[in-house]
Each structure stands twice: as structure tokens, then as C-alpha cells.
Length: 92
Image (cartoon, rainbow, N blue to C red; front, side, top):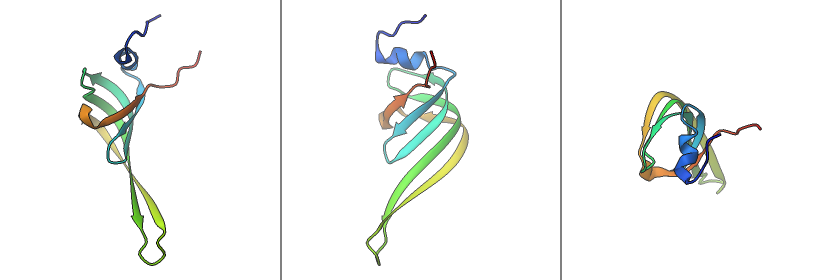
């Protein structure tokens, strides 16, 4: 069994697994982690990107939440935009 001694160990154990990555600008990614470095630059494959935007209807002052999704085969993510990385759920 692999031990976890630092936060990056958890990411190391997630190589070739599907991970969730929350980014700045209300962007979320779900994809297979292929590579990463100490700056949290990452290469993800089979990525589903979700972008959430909020607008205010001028007539009713209601907040309208819009989500747009796209799929990307391979994506490089700069570590300076990463807020959170969640490894896959493991069943014991």
C-alpha cells in the first residue's frame, strides 16, 4: 500500500485516474490525470469542462446561472489557476 506523506502524494496516486479540478473563473474540469509537476501544472485527458456564468436579468433583477460544457481530448492546465484537486473516490 502506498503511503501519503505530502499533499502531492495524493495527486501522485491519482495518475491515470479520473480527477475533479476546480479552477479560477468558475471553471471545473473532470478528466484523466496523465501528468503533473510541483506547481500543479497538469495534463488531463478525456476532459469535460464546465464553465458557470451568472447574469442579471435587467427587467426582473433575477440572477440567471448558465452552465456551458465542452469535451476536450487533451488539456494542459497551468497550476496558477488551480484552486482544488479532488482525487477519485476509492472504495475500501
